[in-house]
Image (cartoon, rainbow, N blue to C red; front, side, top):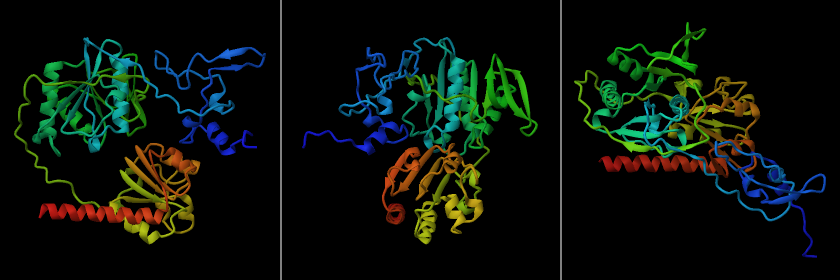
Length: 407
């Protein structure tokens, strides 16, 4: 009786569902199988095989559909091909925003555009000011990494950063400069840098093709097409991020120091802003509640403690727990937050569409198989009330500890 092989319907469903977090672990390692004509076929590629050009090969064994049988095995980690530029013929310099010390989606799009401009002979040079927390420059197309550190570059210091970019320009003479045309600092820095170089930049560029740049003009109603200039201020989604190659990100240094400029700007630090007054489309940190939230008073206390902007699913809005202007999704507001926390939201397709541009998604839910868990970068499985209470206590302990250290 114990030797009878019994089916596991849940395992078969996970093996068919490519969005499930355990999908890869449920795949069957199958080297050969019988075709429809009775001929034994051999699988020349492993599951998830990446070709020499970074193209993912198709597995025709049927293993990805969960149709095979055998012992389950975790999929082997895929190693992307290494893109090396030993002696660059020229450089494409990129000065990313690095909001929060990490590459944003806008920065990654910019690096993708730089990689396409560099081709096989050029190298992408990323210029970063101050300390950073990014650990994946290699996976985002950076061939050379230049970190310009110093207290004069901390905070809001556009004049001193222009001096740093000029020092890089004098040493490396990049063929093109790319900066994000954003409100996070790249747009202003790029225009100041252009004025210092005496060059006319291409702004709000959304496409570069055949030596021409296309930028938005006329309040976004027209396109301005011109020959590709040396200085480019690119909009979001100007190119696809690098995803098929890994790069060296070799560190380089300036041969000379950066001249100090007499600053006419004094940075007095950030101004406290009420998160509730921030428009949903502009908020960078959003905590949204859904049908799984049972204690809304606790939810509001948690958002205040975290300093986050409140959002909600359509179900929570329809039930009257949140106002209509806080609804997130295709039927509400499309958001572009750097961090989006979904509390008790199962993940309807309209809601997932509305958070598609968010950098990091954290899901708190009781159901490990819901769609929001599949979309999330970090998932916490448990009761939302207990987790929110623990978050409030952790924030209070952190702030009290900081006050004691300051005293």
